[in-house]
Amino acid sequence: MLMNRQACTVVYVTTMYWSINTLATIGYGDLHPVNISEMVFCTLFMLFNLGLSAYLIGNMTNLVVHETSRTREFRDTIQEASSFAQRNHLPTRLEDQMLAHLCLKFRTDLEGLRQQETIDSFPKAIRSSISHFLFYNLVNDVYLFRGVSNDLLFQLVSEMKA
Image (cartoon, rainbow, N blue to C red):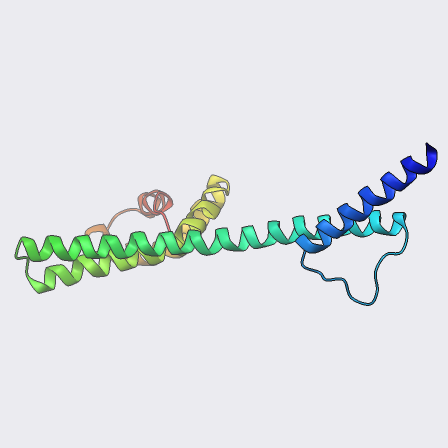
C-alpha cells in the first residue's frame, strides 16, 4: 500500500512537472530534474516565472494601449473639427486656428496636467512664489495694469495657473 502511494505521488509530480514545462515552453534539454523534490522545485519556479512574465507583458500592453487610445481620440477630434469647419464653410485661417488649438491641447494634456497637479500639491505660499516668478514681469508689462499697485499685481499673479 505504501509503495503504491509513493508511486502515485511520483507519477502525479512527474505529470505536473511535464505539463508546466510544456506550458512554459522551456523544453526538456540535457539538464532536467531527477528526483521528486527537484521536480517540485522546478515546477514552482516555472509557475513563478510564468506569472511574472504575464504580469510584465500585461503592464507593457496596458501602457501601449492607453497611449494608442489617447492618440485615437485625438485623431477623431481633429477629424470632427475639420468636418465641422468644412460643413459650415469656415475660413481656412479659422480652421487652422481650431486645429492648432486642438494640437496644443493634446500636447499640454500629455505634459501639462502632471505639471499642474504637481504645482497644486504645494502650499499656497510656494504656489504664489512660482506664479510670481513665472508671470509677474509679463503682467507688469501689460498696458491695462500700468499704474496699479504691486500688491494688486501680486494678488492677481498668485491666482494664475502655469
